[in-house]
Image (cartoon, rainbow, N blue to C red):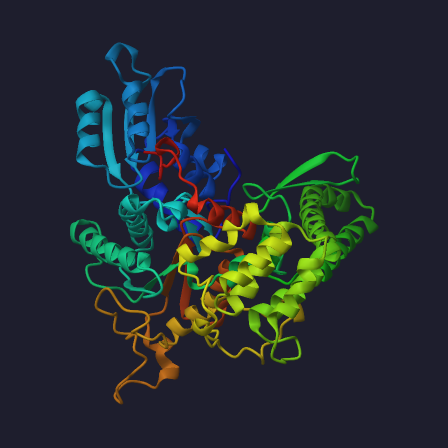
Amino acid sequence: MAPAVAASGERGLKSLVWQKLKTSVFDDCWKEEEWKIILLDDFTTKLLSSCGKMTDLLAEGITVVENVYKNREPVPHMKAIYLITPTVKSVEGLINDFASKSSSKYKAAYVYFTDFCDDKLFNKMKSSCSKAIRRCKEININFLPYESQVFTLDVPNAFYHCYSPNTEKTNDAVLEQIAEQIVTLCATLEENPGVRYKSKPLDNASKLAQLVEKKLENFYKIDERSQIKGKTHSQLLIIDRGFDPVSTVLHELTFQAMAYDLLPIENDTYKYKTDGASGKEREAILEEDDDLWVKIRHKHIADVLEEIPKLMKEVSSKRKATEGKLSLNNLAQLMKKMPYFRKQITKQVVHLNIAEDCMNKFKSNIEKLCKVEQDLALGTDAEGQKVKDSMRVLLPVLLNKNHDSYDKIRAILLYIFSTNGTTQENLDKLIQNVQIENDSDMIKNWKYLGVPIVTTSASQQRRPSRKDRSSEETFQLSRWTPVVKDIMEDAIENKLDSKEWPYCSQCPAPWNGTGAVSARHKPKTNYSEDRKSGSKLIVFVIGGITYSEMRSAYEVSQAFKSCEVIIGSTHIVTPRRLLDDIKALTVTKSKDTVYFKDE
């Protein structure tokens, strides 16, 4: 099993999900001194890997982990736990294991579905192997805890279904499933939040919000174990991806966002060599089990490069201090501490490698780009002077032969976003001059996300006003703040406009949404005290979140201690990946390649 965060660690969502799995699954079928096999499908493998390790499973009496789709050797003397999604493929895997009494693979089956299993599938299972099934439950965990305050639904292809002009018929079914998954997140958090959505420019957010509200109502009506019947002191905001196109294409210089943008990190795994190009290749997994990663992932690259060597010196000096006095006792102590020192140094070497890799890319090309991007995104330069001619700012990037087509497309998009669209003539010239005809859909297809790309010069609007953050200390090349951070702060301070952010339900008392309060209430500044401690703000973006938006959730939670912000999406995006997905929106996919979740 892939390494993951220790279940015992205090890691927010991950810890919560592990606890729920332990209670709903492992404790439910626990028997002293009885070992079991666990069968997983693709989604539940990721789910278990995201919050537990093999050692945690061993502690729960699990001795073997198997894939329900694959052929396996029978172990008829052992009982099996089936932790699976309620899909045809997974249920057929279970049925095949008990096709006949004489060829049953296991002694008995304990079946736990991640979510609601429809009657047709349930009856098929019941008629085929009911005698073998000792337990059958729905545990309501149909999302992945990616970090302590970040979740994903693990449905990247939902982007195509929600925004492609070719999939209008499947859009409703996709939103229906996303809504069911969001309800399992709320159930895990034991929240019944007030649901709000961003009303423009598309109607995906509105449709999804209404579906979620309806499903929450039904869930808490029929869930006998739940004490929650009314609304809790939490809010769920649902937003379409086009709400902030800038943050998706800008080069970020905070450690995590920069590394995932510039380096080939796949499945959170970074590959590096310790002894130059000829050295042995090593792998490191970027996860919350690594305290140093948690400490530095949201810091600016300049701070990271300063901090890691200091930590390395610190560990080395501790080691030398122990080595200094040669007594048997000290030697014994040193032997005990060696693995700890080695582990500490290894982590620091990994992060120093990542930081140096990022800086090599930055120095060669990205540094010049960043100034242009920041000026275009904010409409002002580092001195606060207004950018009068965006095209003049953009041209040096387009003329520079060292920048690849992705970087030029990102800069062109920022130029277009800064003027809220450009003329068809201007767009054609840009595409032709930069010779990106084959990738021009990476620019044009943003219109399907409700982002203005081609407009008449008369209809070009001014950029929407943003919070003034000029007093906040920032690096010159990192002046942009993701729009979601403004939204989070405004939601917590009750400043969201109720016309722009309508409620689908009755608003919970402490979040009255309009920002207006009667004289009998406390003044606005004390809103946070009004709320029960531990209220939550859940933000869900349809079509991907960026690493900088994830960082915003932690920053806002830190600033407003009374409210924890949790952010999630269908999946997590990097700029390059999102541009590829945008380009693919107008590609007609054959029916067998258009799937949503494993059906």
